[in-house]
Length: 196
Image (tube, rainbow, N blue to C red; front, side, top):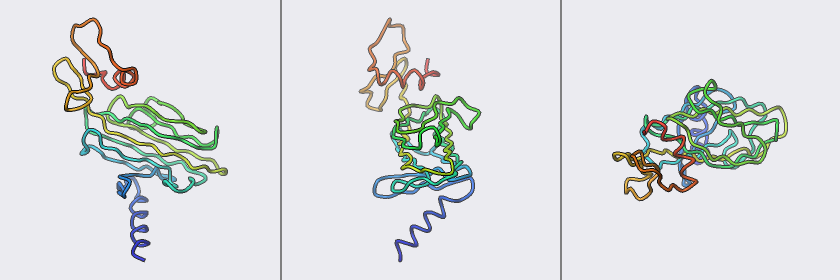
């Protein structure tokens, strides 16, 4: 009975209009994109490397519902970005996860994810906006996305991925070239537009 009451309390917290609490369990923190309405997730107090799982309204265990049209605004501290990685499994062409690089759906559309695909992208600033839409039938497992707070470490002309300064991401000095791993370079192109 106690577990049931805790579950009901957590579900009620998630359904609050306009806001949601981050739910914690043994696997870490997570939040759900609601069936309708907008959930605002404020991560401005979270440090570099913090991760949050984002699920459709079915969570990690269940399929999403029919007729979803829910939103989520994810915000991290100024100077930080959000790295997204994960998997999407929706009814191809009919059920879509839209990810925007900003505070709302007027921002630049990063991509519309539908069918069985992966997400691997980063925001250009401290906000990402999500819209999950599903039609009236055929529901799949949905999505499990990891959002990671990323704050570059800037030391003069050098930009590092960590406080120990073991991974150089970008050099803003006068050197002709510097070797950057290809996977990191794609991140640095977007995340460090204001560093130089």
